[in-house]
Image 1 (cartoon, rainbow, N blue to C red):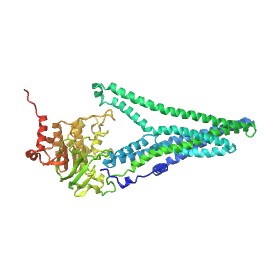
Image 2: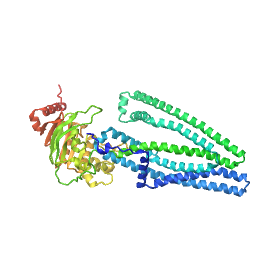
Image 3: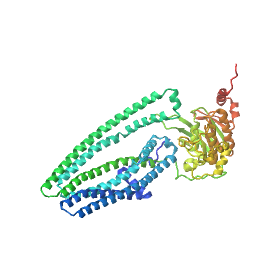
Length: 613
């Protein structure tokens, strides 16, 4: 089932530079201002640093040369205005560039979500794809992650390289030995800090696993659906014990990490004292020798410290860009992950009103992907089935017989390992699979209720809703009286997890809402995969009868493990051991006296009233 495509077999090697260029291309095509703001921020930061470097030496020079008071005041005013102006421009740039960065990150998030929601269904069960999705989400989930933070790194490159060049020029009169000591201590300090940061990065998954366990216990302890179990079964002490266990593991991890950071900070402090001590004594020697004045001494001493900052900054930018590149690589791998089905490149398939559609499974064999070296059991072997236009087909059988798998094959969620699924005699593999999905309406065991209004849930569209059609579908589904009795009517919100004022519909009401949704889509093929399993048999039978009435003229496939619920269908299939064990109408199968009759009688006993003694 998970045969690799050519696109998957030739996995791209993106590289750090390639990932950086990916972000630059995304910005150039969507928000070019992000690039210019990043460059401008770096230039202003260097300008502010250089201005601040000259403030004290310039004032000191005025005092040394016994300049006039007005000259001193003009010097102070010049630097005050320059720093204030540059800082104001920098604050403006940084405030405004945030919006572009967030918008660009949101653009990439949208691409990931679109890929996630439209990719081939089997990919959602492939561990490699799931892991890439998790990593892509992690790289995009906040402004500290690569998708947004990389622009800070780009700004840092501009700032540090330009600052390094300017400060190197300023230090041309300083002995090369001082510059060599400065560079050496800066590199050593960086390597020590890099080791600590690299340890933290290598062990990030260990930290994530511990935090995941802590958060899981906290979330479950607050889960209102678990509240009854916690109280009835006395789970409080057990949950507290788990929480304490994982917190001890987390504190142990933090202790190991902080010891490394402490050692790195101590080493950096010693190297800083060594570097500044050597620079101080050398510059003091030059002052005493009359080679430079006090103002130049102050300028060069500050330049040595700044020079170290630029060197460390460049190396830190390289390291950060490498880590951010790894995060972005997961995003790019996810977006470029090969599809298993034809999508846009497939033949377009347009729904034509009144057109008849025949679905055929011809010689179909299918098995789910196994785990490890053990292959999974074959679900179907050389199965043949034809569903005629307008036919009401029921598929029944025990749990695990393959009923849901059959629905997934019919819906095109899976492709068979052998054989083919045909639509009007043409293999569905050649069509745009998304177009094929538009021909089918379905209600499954775990149907979705969107945290939005009732109207949106019926239309499955928040932007364009035909309210007349919504009301008509709700009325046909038998839910109009209930909805119009609510204060918000069709604007009433569902899902209290998101909206505290939301209304909670009963199981039967939700089923009728699903009927309305199915009617609104108005597809020629309808699939119902045990959507009423949580209802009692009488309610289930009533809902299925409603589905039967409202899907007149459409091909409908009803899946149920309760045999009596689908007795109205034109044809019933009993699935057993991966094959069609029996086939016919309800009456014909009972008359045969085989497995269907046996199962029907067994189920009937559970619902017969017991007479009092």
